[in-house]
Length: 358
Ligand SMILES: NC(=O)C1=CN([C@@H]2O[C@H](COP(=O)(O)OP(=O)(O)OC[C@H]3O[C@@H](n4cnc5c(N)ncnc54)[C@H](OP(=O)(O)O)[C@@H]3O)[C@@H](O)[C@H]2O)C=CC1
Ligand SMILES: O=C([O-])C1=[NH+]CCC1
Image 1: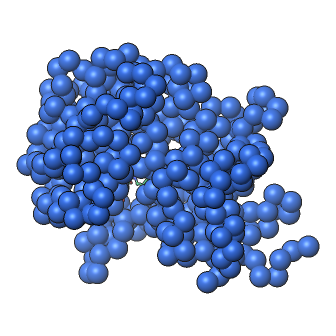
Image 2: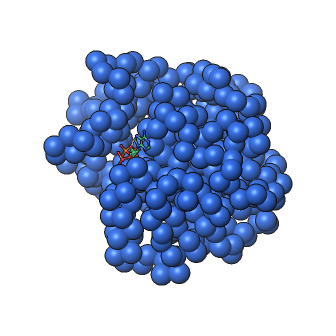
């Protein structure tokens, strides 16, 4: 029978209380693995039906609405207590994220985030809309989680199974907006970052981030932070580079990368195209990994070099790059990531006994 109170609504404030790295990373890794198998490949294996998302332009350039539907079947969430089910029972989720990207929002008074999202969850029995979940923070967390997972499998695992816990790295953050800020704090909390290079077009924002990080309780005291005057300065000597801006011009050039290679780049931002932040000469020498081949076919038209593989296939098969490789994780963002994280958050909320609509 239909629930007369549906759809339930979970606000950004409620969602925020239940977001944590083990929950989000597990859900994102589930989505990345599941997307490798499309519908019907192997019975009982996780799989994803994820039609290409739509982009609807609004009045001005830089204003766009994306509709992102996904069905994720037979996947497991195991983080007992933090979301997911401890019994490890396969589950399925039908969801659609509606997200706007209005790049001039931070210049408004008062400033607003560029990205604003809501995630809709549907009943698998009746197709009814059961839940509307604020999805702005989920979008930030799941995108950062995808970069963390990519860095673990495409960079650290070149050096052995425990390298992500043992190896010290220098990280460059290019763009200190919402994405850049969370990339900076998450990389420092999840990996051993000895040097953090911050660059932002408006330098005051990079300086503010540096101060905030140093004042954060528990911030890794072994991390030295440098605010850089150019993207090239931030990139030089870095092992891992995260670039998340709206720039239509390249910010990361081959001449600035370490000559010996052994570099990993998380290319997160989306200006006019998803690959505008990294120069063609970097794509030309790199191995390029994507979250979804199907999305890449429609969104990475004109990319300067061929795609090596989906990240999920590297996770599944352990086909790690060579130590000296330059790798790029071209992160577009997937509806299936949003679906799995929203499901895990809803599970965590419900198992906490918290009532919806409050
Ligand atoms: N791959 C994915 O899954 C996702 C990707 N994104 C993308 O990530 C990017 C960042 O998003 P978010 O952090 O939320 O946005 P914010 O608006 O919070 O930050 C934007 C950043 O880009 C910088 N920037 C804008 N234009 C330029 C330019 N021409 N040259 C250099 N820097 C520039 C801004 O610098 P300044 O402070 O000087 O203005 C700011 O640091 C966007 O492209 C967004 O679409 C977002 C969500 C998911
Ligand atoms: O996946 C996503 O949510 C987005 N990718 C680019 C803008 C928003």
